[in-house]
Image (cartoon, rainbow, N blue to C red):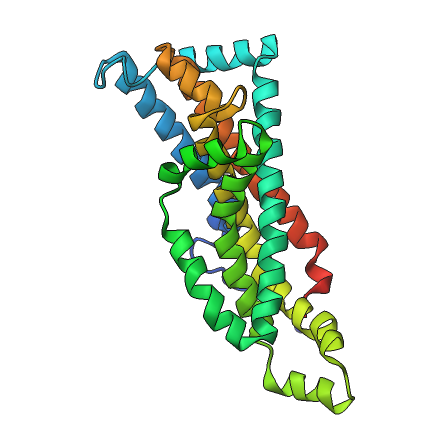
Length: 279
């Protein structure tokens, strides 16, 4: 007589409540996806609020233009080619000012690092100059340098200079004592310590400052164009405002916004390229 065997089917492990339902939404847990969705939502909400404020006359038509008129004006500028000379002029002035500010700030930061008396004697004057209102001194700069590239680049460099100087000084001076002693133990010279230790260490401080300095250089170039210019985004904005072209003014402001995004992306690429030089 044989006894029938009974087999118990394997029991699947119990799933936590809500696991199956949450799996299709797993990508939303990514921080980048969440940030992208939030950014799109903010943009859509801003455009909707802008449209309602213009169409329902919540704000005077002298102060705000409907978004469809603004984008139409922007399209006309791009199609006619009237936008590009102004973009090129402002970009050239911004880059020239940023380059001058970066070189001067780095050279002064090196001098201040190696000479404490020079640092204590010169730095207070730089702080005083930084407190000058740039809009107030712009006419004097234009009168002194003329109406070409020089005054725009000068004001752009003046705004971009200070954050670059401060971050470069901190980066060069904040090298660890152990690292410095290690280099001195192998009889490394002052210049070897500078190029092999201090500068690679300062890159992590200088790169974030470059992003801020680039935006400030753009603001300086625009301010100079407001005072006196024959081309540039600041000149175009002032001309559109004086002619009562509100839609064109907002279109140029959108172009400046894209200009800022381009600066941010450029600094991100530069950050990646110079990442291997960081200490």
